[in-house]
Image 1 (tube, one colour):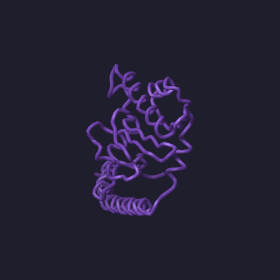
Image 2 (tube, rainbow, N blue to C red):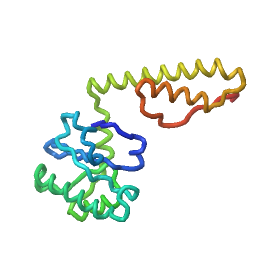
Image 3 (cartoon, helix red, strand yellow):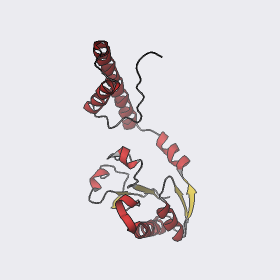
Image 4 (cartoon, rainbow, N blue to C red):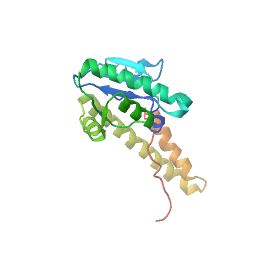
Length: 187
């Protein structure tokens, strides 16, 4: 669904979940009071909240939230995939896993399926990838220009150079840079 909001934070604090039923019915659990993060997507039929099953957000009530979430999943699957108790899951917190198992689900490995689905790109996604590539190339060129002008002056650090890349990326709509792979000086 590629609903974007705080992507890097979400990689280590899973607040979002997506259920794709066998009949194609799709439900997105997102931030409470933030359905607008996925309402633009015609594939998402319902927006809910309550999949944030981690301690920072739920404290000592993670188990209660996990039970509520897993019950919602059970009800949805009973309607959209009657009799099916197999559920492929990509990533899940332990409380969520145990709660789904307690609802009678057999949890299957879902990462391969998820990645194969993500590999299929439509025209809009290909265009977005081209835009992202152009943004990156432009930002790297600006970073190189800055480095060539300022490093010989002797008062420019790798952090200064790196900051140019980030600024140029953000200026062009980029969201974040995955890793810090900048090194200068002789090899």
